[in-house]
Image 1 (cartoon, helix red, strand yellow):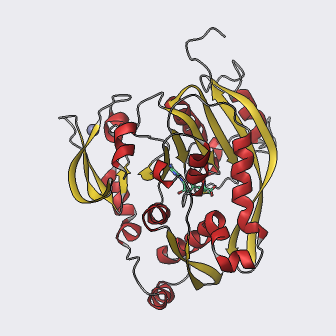
Image 2 (cartoon, helix red, strand yellow):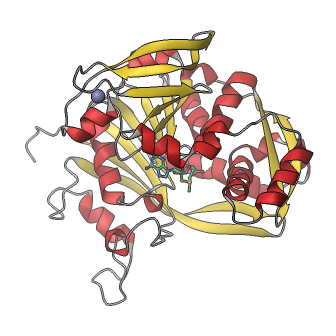
Image 3 (tube, rainbow, N blue to C red):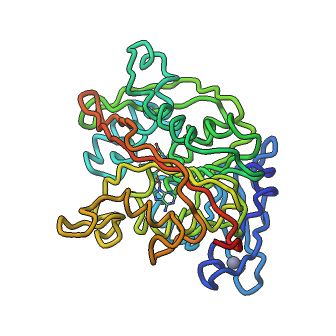
Amino acid sequence: MKIQHFESLRPVCPKCRQNTGMEMWPLRIAARGKQRDGVLVEGRLTCTNPQCLGEFPVIDGIPILVPDVAAYVAAHQGAITRRTDLLHETMSLIGDCCGPGSEYDTERQQLSTYVWSHFGDWDTAVSAGNDSQAGSFLRLMEAAWQLSGPRPAGPVLDVGCGVGRSAWHLAERCDTCVLGIDLNFSFLRIAQAILERGSVKVGWRKIGVVYEPREFAVDLPAGDKVDFWCCDALALPFASQQFSLSNCLNVLDCVYSPIELLEELERVLVTDGWLLASSPYDWSAGTTAPASWIGGHSDRGELHGAAEPLLRQLLSPGGHSQSLGSLRLREEAEAIDWTIRVHDRSCVQYQVHAFAAQKEDPGAEP
Ligand SMILES: C[S@@+](CC[C@H](N)C(=O)[O-])C[C@H]1O[C@@H](n2cnc3c(N)ncnc32)[C@H](O)[C@@H]1O
Ligand SMILES: [Zn+2]
């Protein structure tokens, strides 16, 4: 956690915010166990509310700022305590022992998929193979960025940043600090390792539980403006009206309530701030209950499952009873290619919908 980011973003206690509605209690750095060049690598933040005194650990440079830290750490103890210094052969043996479908295997698969998507272009083996799919996320990020217009002053939030490429992309385009947030600790560890060491160690999934070890440099500009924190996008540890842009690529169909996600992103935007979002609307009942799918889930429903018309209504003044306050749709792109790699013989190719919305002055006359 960059101290500069902590001081300029002034995070508030996510536990107090959740328990008391909108009460904002600042966090303070209570312990600096390990520090290097303005980065708190290991330490502890606490809530300044004497009735709360909630504690939030910083591990491998990643502050865990979620409302229920105990539940998060218990549910992600494997990823948080995972050793990253093991030889590939040892990891391969562990992978064989845990087997397909295990937590260990799922984490390796996800890292293979998203590191390929975000940083595959930096691996000489991938770029020598002229694999155009490895660049689809870069093209999506740029296409989404092109939908936005002039931005007011203020920091930038990259929501569901994964292994982090979009945060660097935004930092190159915005003269301000950029914060990438995600709930996947292994993804955030990759992103923090790139900030610290400028390199990535990963296994490209070949097939089944077989991975090819790769280690390569990633030297992206503007890293000094970027940081990565573990936060829940539906319970952000920030006061309202703080960010000039919320970037939210391919996350809407990964949360239990996409509408609550949009409302939370609107809350933290300053007036004239931008929301940039994309999604394949690839709903799954395990993540989002069908009743919460934007556009519905029934063939006989008014929208036949289409998310786009409902979003247009939600993001226009008085267009829908379930208001998203002051967010107004400005631009959209119907279909942008986004391909993610599963293994040597499998890719998933999406056509994502992307849109840009801007926050109008909540107090202004319609
Ligand atoms: C489909 S991935 C997209 C990652 C990246 N934005 C991209 O487009 O490559 C969805 C990401 O959202 C993250 N995510 C899901 N629910 C979240 C939440 N409530 N808060 C923060 N991140 C979340 C996941 O961990 C994952 O990294
Ligand atoms: Zn608190």
